[in-house]
Length: 81
Image 1 (cartoon, rainbow, N blue to C red):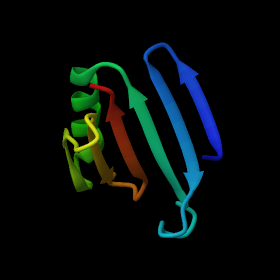
Image 2: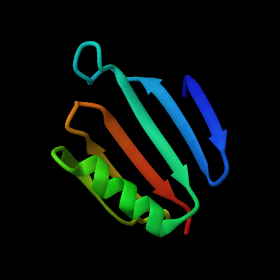
Image 3: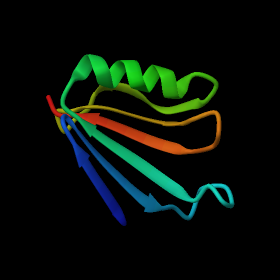
């Protein structure tokens, strides 16, 4: 990770990403602690975008999903169980 921002109830990580479109070369991870808020934000970011991993409980035990929003920005949202 190349950047980390922290606030109440959320951690935001960003890194450069070699498979992103030119000038959109970042991948963003939001680590959240509210499952309903995670779902709401995921749905808003997915509107007009492409979901690559459906938001659901994953094998490591967290609520996680991955998408590319309508602007070509890649997002991963993770909420610890």
